[in-house]
Length: 359
Image (tube, rainbow, N blue to C red; front, side):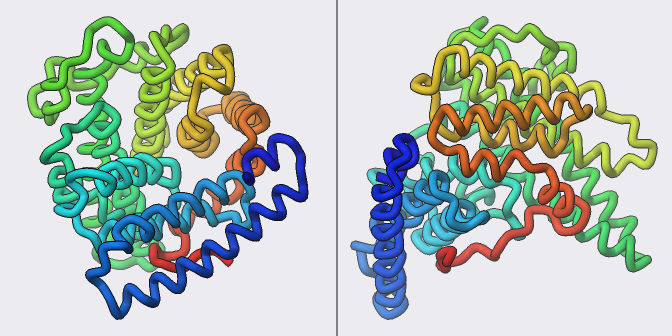
């Protein structure tokens, strides 16, 4: 209802959708109060997860609160924690778990605590009966990024306070980031040919842990234009991968006092993201998910290596939103200012994950 109202400019329909949104949040609060006294209620297993997912979709369209969509996904993640990974191995619970996990990447820059779904248990147990796909394998790595940025924030605080533990934390941050960079390089070294359409996928490929990858480091030249995308799905995964590389390379560069490292590689990753977006736009809005390119473009806006590249990403994300009925969300993400301030103080800062809804 909200989506159609925005696409058609129907204010009455938008108002009605907002009214139902308010009713839904009120009903959710009632259910959560019920849950506090009936923790084993099976009905909650589904309605408790579906509600914040739907609310997040509404906020992505209407943006009544700048952090609304992220807050609802935080709430959905918290509700999954209550269920536990064992309860998410089959059926609707498994499908919802996978959907929420994928969506969490789109708000990767909003965590002030490491996501529980990034733990080893959540990265293994729910897949016991339904094996991982390539996007699951990549997201295993991407979900580790918030913890790395949170630790860097701690290092900056300790450094500013001249605390004796600052050097030890700096080493810990650098080691963690380099390990993530190695995993991302390994991911591309193993799956790059698949994504570029040079090799067919096999289910056994997704069991790889990148411990023995023939080509352990991706060459930045691989991400120089032109990049040929075989299909929309591959373009989305490649953009998602490049966004992760940008965030980790940006963090490592910020830890380098000379500031000279990773610049060329980051620029190449950024150009590949822009190329993937252009590929999607050439095919038209109906060929891609509404929010599929927001995370890559947002990452590029934050980490662009030139003002021209940043402006190109800002234009691209605004156009993306205009063509897909999520212009408010994309306009919000087109600004660099908020992320700049956050990246210099407390990274991934947002209201703590919980059951509260934006209001």
